[in-house]
Image (cartoon, one colour):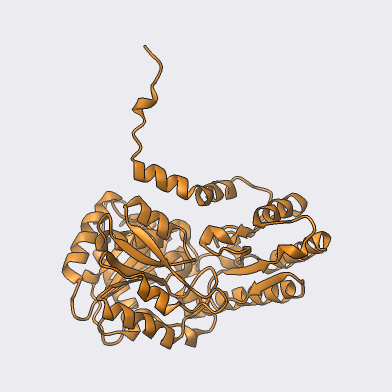
Length: 409
């Protein structure tokens, strides 16, 4: 028999092009899981220190009880258990806009929730407006469906969306605006006026908004938290959330889409299409769904407040310590588990870019930090995960300070 020919390789052109385009991000994900000995501040995962940032007792008890009772061993509807949809509708209702289980779809985490939203709003060849920095899978998911992700400008230091830039990108092929609310990895929290400006543009052009609100429960100051659906009566909002930040359990793989559509502009076609699309993956794990029904009856406000206080204290530590180094500019977050800092490499003797900073820091200290360009923060930005035990983070930051001193002019 003759050797295999390359003619057998039939990867679609758009998939091959997308994987090449996003190879750097994909390689970063693979590499970050291979290094066992490092103090890893680079990962998106903020469950690495379970004694400090683990799931709540209520969450663990709820899942355990679901397994013990034997009520979660079979299949559920691919788009989610009815009881869970009802529980989420009650938990996340917004005043003045009815939210029923019919407007809830369960998915495999927040990324899957965003993917479902993109898939039902856009045809191949359409485009969606996405922030220039944020979750790199926004663009990846769009590319894999032959949807063009057009990036609108966001002020790195203030988090404000450049509204003229956003408006100028809209054309006849634009089907939605994707917004990270609050913004990440910068951790900016939008003001009501900033969100209203985006809503006005969406209303003017009849564009629904996919609002990624995974870090709403990680806003350090509770009074600053604003869900987009609470600010509009006219623009359909597909709000995406998940368990990863709600109770520190990213590996449980459960997310949701909540459709707020007061005038039912999208309701029927969007929800039916999402239900059909969800059959591709046959739903989130049933034991997790079953346990979360119980979890949603608990008030996790105290847990969120304490967790957010610890993360904010970590953020204050990082920003305070790094700010004293000339050539390092920390970006003070208002939410989320990350802190970013900008490096002026003109002030370093033998470190010329983010790649070198990343590699040399690891070689000398066994500390890993992430490149900002993995999430669209171009221009010499690095990113640190704040969901780390405070004593470990403090020691790591001192090592980073010493590294910078060794290599400064």
